[in-house]
Image 1 (cartoon, rainbow, N blue to C red):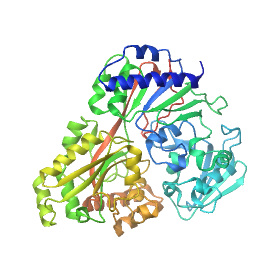
Image 2 (spheres, rainbow, N blue to C red):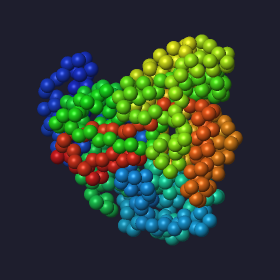
Image 3 (cartoon, helix red, strand yellow):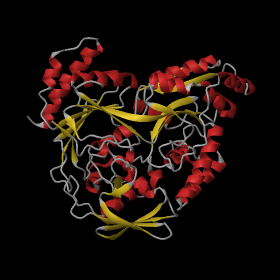
Image 4 (cartoon, one colour):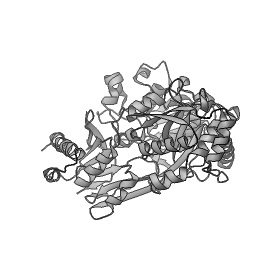
Length: 530
């Protein structure tokens, strides 16, 4: 049986199981049907349908978890770390002034469509993102092009050497190249498919794209012409199962071999034989974006009151069952070298919150709160949203929740909260202490300028600190600047800082060689399913 025909048959059976379990009845025949799946086909339960399979066009880790198995970058994160090592580049040099990075490219690599990987391909990728006059710039949008905003020019030195010229020293450059936004796509495939490239992805990775059936599955197959070690699985099927309880039911019944972001309340169900639980700390922040431009949260006293009113310890212990720590500010403690350990989380102090609300004239204020059903790094967002609503009611606030599916939610939040909401849930998993504040807290990162500062926070000193940290070549100086930034942002409270999560996943005992990465990505090249 072919992989494609098998996946259609198995997904039909899995859909039947989902419908049955949703109604409270388990169909005993389904697991035995699924047990006929061939060895080497790994079924992954994802948290949502991907938005696109173009790495330059997406922002969600949910999508990146697929893409890192199809594409590769010049560099990657070394397994188990956020340190950078070679991938499609074999080595590189950095000029003394930190403004030129020259990469030697790996010989003998081809894209899945048979076209060569070379310096021209690298130049095409970055010009497509950064040059508005590029003939294929219209295949965007490119929401994380900010990662490479320092690139002034990409130069082909020779067929296997490429040089990036930056407008100034930019400390996060290598780390950003390792992030999925830096994955290299086939220029020929972009030229052939145009704006539809995101549905027809072509990279150089250990798996090649096979098919995408909307709301059913994305299927990738082993790349037999891969330049490196062959993938351990014949194919991987990524199934979007938005409802967390349904993902758990499918995992327990054998409908999927692996699930990510297991609800904390469900982890205990996988403690026995037949399953393996993986956990890994990483740079994660779950927070509430506050609308600092209009409405009650435009007053810093109200924003501070919200931080005091929400019982984050209770959320971490009762809702998340100890799978996270209370957050103190905008930088996750996983970035130990840049984290401000002097900051303490806002304590739960309802009386302080009431006093601040009264001082701001916001007693009994009405707030609109955007909540998502689930998404990348969102933990248990509906339960967390409900707990937050109850905490705010205790200090006299009238909070109206509006709940959205993940991609719809992003479509509402990313363009900005003005005229729509007072606060919204959000989660980021980042690669560098620069990433989240630079993309979501700078004045010039407002949505109308292509950033993710959806609450319109603006502080001139924070802007200056972030720009200075980007150009600092000494890590100790970068750390000092980031710590100062954290102090100011915590005081200004443009967000409610809720939790830093320890990610998890569950695999069946048929799965070998799997480990979670601090990057929150799913590296499946070495995974074997028996």
